[in-house]
Image (cartoon, rainbow, N blue to C red):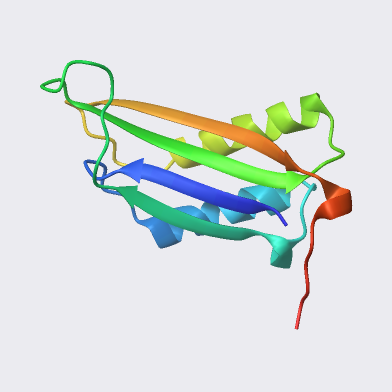
Length: 118
């Protein structure tokens, strides 16, 4: 735990392996997560619509982090801001495209979450 889902539109050129590694390192650095517990994956979106103007050059990147319940709203906000700040650094963003970067944290109920490490 946690699980990081990194979704991005196909008009963004992102080195996903390197970006996921940087995000995992940031999560570990936050002091809230164990290094070997973070599971991250990237999902490139080929079919998407942003707004109602299909000719507009737009893109988005959304991160959803599911974590075990029990953390305060303040901690969750800090982690969401950390994810956004981390992904912004070191990327070559297209100059002619509006890019929206978002992050959300979702609680998984600790008392009903199952996990087995083999």
